[in-house]
Structures are given as structure tokens and as C-alpha cells.
Length: 546
Image (cartoon, rainbow, N blue to C red; front, side, top):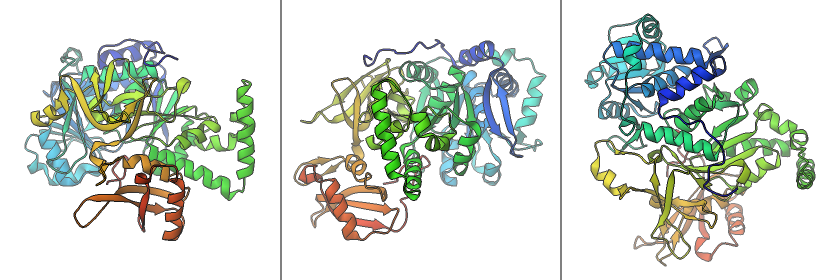
């Protein structure tokens, strides 16, 4: 397939309201969402029923004067979260998703900085909001997903929807906002006062869905597991599934993933590489535990031979391994960081497509993606048809900062023209990520600009590249590579800090790292190893905090 040309026909839409109306009108009785309630019963909601809930909620909010408000949401993943999200996107308001894992001071700062006047919240956030109500002078309406009765300023989500049922919907339905105006305000990770508010427009969100589906498809049933406050999940999974009329099943807790895979039997799932690594490690560990390494290797050899003849026996040969994912899995989409080629190869061997892509919040978030019909594990795929890209100031290897321009690029940073000017220049967004573009016009990521190690020899090191290689050592669970400094503060060589799955001596780990890096240039070799006793501290998307 020729790169960067639309491979799939996608139904055109111009607004989120139009997207939901198309789903309601054309697939009214199809199941849109499935989730477990407090009694562990599985609830199924059709596209028509979902649309009606957003209409009722939107009518009630509009009647209260919040039709064009900035509306925040602090909650765990839930069906209620999705209803609040699409209710606001359909109208003329601005949706502000806030990470529930943030410290209290950070949440207060973002609620105030975002100019939100309404906040949706879950039961776990209620005491925090009640205790800090006086520190939130702009919030005039608190709506609890789990509240049974209204309580002054704290309103019941269920009662609000019930009130909306009897209301005329024309005022809410008539709300419109400029497609290039702020529609979703997403804060990047950062401590109080440092987080930047990324301003995404309705045009950005629509473009990410429409053009993303032109280069990569999903299937009939998805399992939704990643935090909804991240654009990767809220746009690439929630909005994409809605437009494609997939049934999205909601996982409430990471500890329930294996159980939910078997319950909902999804055909696709969105993950971050760290979660894919956990599943891979679990499967390979079980293969070794059952002493089936030779049986597995023989099965792979047979299936590869038969695939050359056009015969695919992987679903039968590796049924036991595939059943871990519910038995119907076709595709795993990985985003948030590069995936190891070995990981992609393993899943391909057992008949599960693992595709990687590249995205960043400021690009709504999709920049590029691999599709199963031209899946290259060594790249982050082909750019969206609505985008241009280039490498700024490339070195002799063609590596430089990735710059993109097009329909998914943000409007700017909220109330921060200085930071906006630093990254948006003549329409080009400077991503802060380094990489190079292949002859096939695919992107290869080498690392973050802020993580680059500059040795006193003048060599630039991208630690993420070396970390991906080191992670091929089966007992190394986590690794961070950084520069070793001399007495003058200059970085002169590399150190690897590792967390292990099994006990090993420092000497053994050092030797194994030396062996796996033997084909790399000498300046990329690690000269010191530190073994951690505890895992690295992670972000809410399971990325290591450097």
C-alpha cells in the first residue's frame, strides 16, 4: 500500500453533534457501551439510549445557564464520564478532563486555571471537593456521578438527567460553537503552575477521528482500559469507537483487565507499551513455567511456513495463548511510546496484530500510525493524510526534531502565549521529539529532546533507543539510561539503572548488557549498572518518571 494515501473510506462528519446523530439515526439499536454496575451486573446501552441521555443532561445544564461553560471532570473511567464528555462536546461548552491521580494542590490549580464553572466528579473525589469548596470561587455547580440526592451546591447526576427528560431540548440542540474555537482543554503532566493547558478545537478532534480512521481501522468490540483524561483514550478510543459504531466495553480497574478480557471478548484494545510488555511477560513466563518453549518455537516455525502458502493456522495453534485476551482479539493498538520490534514480532507470531503509532497531546493526539496491512514494527507508521511533517536541523544520520503541520495541531497553550510561541512557528508545531523519516515516509522515533545525553566527546545519545535494546534481556523489567558525569560536570559515558524480575548479581547484569549492546558504537556502551530494589515511579499512563 502506498503510504500516506487514504486506505479506508470513512463517513464524513463535521461536528461531534453530527457524529452522535449519525450513530443514533443509522445504528439506533446497536450496543454502544457495556459496563458493570455496582452489583457486578453487565449493563448494555444502545446508541439511541446513549444519545437520549446526553440530550437530557445537555438540556438540564443549558437550562441552568451552563450551555457555554467550561466544564471539568474528575473521575475514574466510567459510563457517566463518557456521557458528560460527549454532552459538552455536542454543545457550545469546553470540556476539561482532569487527572484524578494528581495531588490536591494540582487539582485545585487546574480547576481554577481552566476557568471551569461546573465540575463532574465521582464518589472518590467528593470529600476533596467539599473540603476545598472555598478555594474554588469560580465553581458554581458540583455534579456527583454517584450522588443520589441534590445537596445545595452538590447536585445528583441522575436527578439532573431525570429533570432534563421533561425539558424542551431545542435550546441545547441549538447551541453551536466555532469549529476553530476552544472545545477541549487538556493539561499536560506537570506540577502546580507548570502544567500547560493544551487548547484543542472541534476541528482538531473531528480531524483526528476522520483522518485517523483512513489509515487505521478498529473492529466491532473494544475494551477501554486507559485513563479517560488522556487524549489518546478519549479521542482515539472513545470518539473513534462511536463514529465506527463499535461496542466499547468499560474496564473499571487495571486489576480486572484479564477478567474483563474474558467477559467482554473484545476484538481490539488500546494499550500503552508498558501494559503490552506486562501481558507479553506474563504469557512468556507461563510458557516457560509449563516447559513449552520448544512446543511454542515449533508452532511458530510451522505457522510461518504455512503463512507463506497462504494458510493461517495461528488461531488454532496458539488458541490457549489467545484465550488470555478473550479468544476474539484481532488487534492491539499501542501508543504513548515506541514499542519494541520483538514485542510486535511475538504477537504477530500468535496471530494478534500489534500496531504502534506516534501521538502527542498537542496533536489531538494522533500524528502517525501503523496499519495491519503495512505494519512495520521498527517505525511509528505513516502520517495522517491531513498532516505535513519534516525534521528540523537533522544531523548526519537524518535525526532531528520532528515538526508537524495540519488539521490536528492545537490552537495553542491556554493563557500562555510565550510557551505557545516557543513551539508553534509559521504553523509548524515543534514536538520536542527526535526522530527521522524513512524513504517510505514513515517516522522512526529516537527519543525526547529533553532526555538527550550529550557526551563530552560531542556525541548525542538518545537513551530511549538503548533502553529498548536492553529491555530484550528477559529478566530486566524496567530500565533508565542516563549520563555519567565527571568532576567537571560533563557527561562522559552511560549508566543503566535497572529493576529486575529475578535476582542477579551486578556483574551478571553488566555482562549481559555489554553483550546485548556489542553491535552498537562504542560511545553507546554502558559502563556502569545500578540495580534498583523498587520499581521506578510511574505516571498515570505507566511511563517512568525520569
